[in-house]
Image (tube, rainbow, N blue to C red; front, side, top):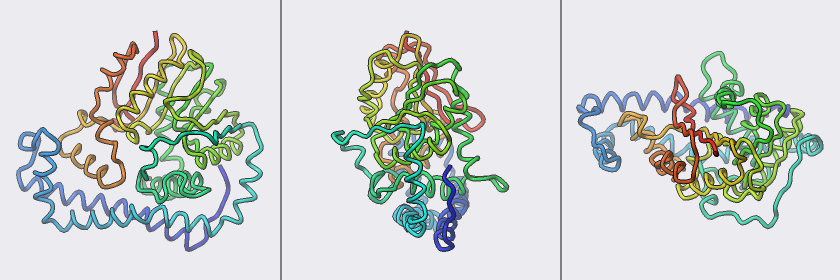
Amino acid sequence: MIDYKLKQHGRASLDFLASLGPSMANLMKKQTEELNKAGFNESTLEKDIDKRSLQIEKILTKLPAFRSQNLLGEWHSNNHARIATSAFEEIESELIEEFSKLKDGQTSLKLDPSIKIPKYWKYPIHRTTGGWDGHKHMGFIHGELIHRKIVGKALTPAGGTAYNDINSDRLKFASEAPRRDYNTILEIGCSSGPYTSKLSEVFPKSRILACDLSASQLVHAQHNGNALGHSWELFQADGRFTGLEESSVDLFTSYIILHELPVDIIVDILNEGFRVLRSGGELFFGDVAPYSSMDKLSSWRTDYLARYGGEPYWRGSATMDMIGEMKKIGFKDIKYYGMKPKNYPWVTFGRKP
């Protein structure tokens, strides 16, 4: 990937944001202890998630650990993109020359100036200031600084490296695909290309096409593809309307995108996948686990963090009848399961007859 070195202020600011992750985990542990004291368990918690939320939050509202978590979460949501952008701007002049060099290479990019951006996508997912195209270089800011330096570092075990650890799940997921002989692979929602790079590792002989709605994410994906020496064919498109010919790809795939989409959009994407897949081609999505796979407390906590963390469509995707929708469209050999040992990513698989 692109070589760079943060200034001291930017590095310290991002390290501080990453350090909030473990603090939040400790606060959640105290909340669980309080709920256990109150006698809440699988048999006493409400089945309906809205009723369960009222039940749980009535207890937790009185707890300092809950109020502290909300305060830290709100501050982090409102400031992470602003702070990452500031860290980028400290080294922007040093990176521009490198970006210019990485326009040239084997990875191509076709932007669509007439593309119609859907209303749902304009929502600031993750509460990212300005959204995915809120800055000309948001592809680098989000993909490199937020994703690797904040999220990756917060999730990395002691002794690990943020880039390797946060991307190990992508490699593991790509390797879960049942075949190695896909001629043409289409990835939707490719962002700056972290999963695309793992597809290249697992399927080095495949032609890889990847699309996204965000121009800035695609520009940085091209930088990454060229830095790695890959021949990706990147293009700007809505995953519902890729513009590809019918029956033209062998694998239709995405990674951790569905929970960012309303249910009707997901269904449209499933239909587009069926349209562009060749006979025998496979749909292969990795995403977050459905609520049905969790205990009641875990599903409430996931839902709560999504509601207040800039994930308005998470509940819909986590509760939709994915198998039923795929059957209606015509997919066969459908599989819907969590990869061990963490139930993550959650696999959605189907084959076009």
